[in-house]
Image (cartoon, rainbow, N blue to C red):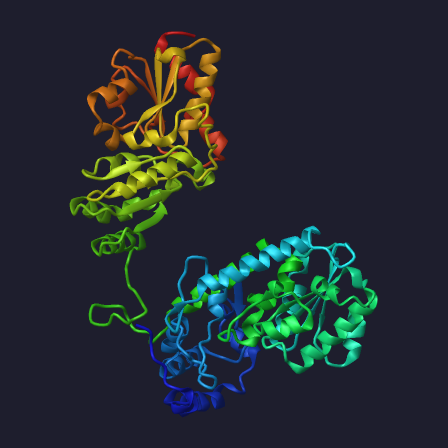
Length: 595
């Protein structure tokens, strides 16, 4: 339930005890000198700095002390700041003078998110406009959009005022490095005709596009400049009124006025009354910015905004309260070891009939294991996703290189463990997981970029559903040796297989992403994948050898980890521990008694 906000006029911050305390405190600190503050606290510069979403804020060079911060936090609490933050994100009309929502945060919400205004989800509309802007920007930047004379557009002039000007021009100046350098971008806001004259002084009307930003398309200053631009453009294009549609677009909502001006309403980009002017540049008001830096960079900018929005939304501070059974509205969650908390929360969500997942580095599965074990014991269809599942961490060394972790998860009764070998197997692994109803699953994924195998040459990844399948085979399906691999070692096994075939050695590659699923198959299927008469077998996996005897037999060979890893670049580690095609080929030949 969204928080309800008291109008500011009913509870002014200046009438709170915290404000009075700050006023008194000011008298104490107003005469302090920064030289004294840094002399008394040499680490002040480190303590009084914060970083979030790529932004670094150093506030140490202000006349404040620790007590100042405590009093400011007290003021935030007494003013109901947290409730106001929640209300804003909840779409409540916290703009009490205009009785409107304040949802600039919706303009950068990711596709698929949901933010309601008067019961309506506005995020799909936001992305519809962004997609329209992107299509238009690509056409202009590529030259597909032609002016009245058939020339491509090389100049873009944004006409607006206030937030419709300042946001785009400041963003353009800040992001000029990413702009299309074959184009020029100008900004006009001053009603003084000199501003417009200087902006177009050296421009060719046949190569110039105007973006007119006015919500009602009646803003006096903006429309004065827009009509000046229209006259200038027509004068340079022979007076043909039809040329306006090729050289003007509108950021507005008043279709009738836009059409009267001569702009094709198909080139009208809308925004909403919950977009405040000063915050509007990430709406259609930012069209000129998107044309300048390109849709991809514009969306990256929005993503950065969204990261800061989420930081602000989820920020905890003194007085925000603790999340407890008797205070579910608290913002501070004390969970101890975060991996343990993640597994416990995942299980709780699963009990609520959701299909949750939690994700961490594989090495930290140790901390999550009690929760994973409980998920298996309780028959919960929770998903635990682990990345960095082998030696891909390289220089991070043995402390971050899983060795025994696969074996320990495989030992948990009822847990389905999957270690897919390429993108197609990952897709099929998720398909398997979503079919589970009473079993949790662990998905072990690689950090390093793995090749996506050509499935027109090798078997389809749908074999993941059987836990193991014949990925590549000897001619005629009559192998003399079987190479069994999982995860990042599947492509390694395929390389070794190709080398063996070139030497006339009939090898078969079996991808085995899940022991548990394979063991559930019929004996006939298992024998078709691992024929009992083929005794020469090699297992390849960047993990402990533990348990592989069940598939390679006591006489088989295991290219696996028998020790902890080491700190070195990945290729050196692969060479040291035998995870190279030539070393797998050598292991196969040893199995066959060949040199």
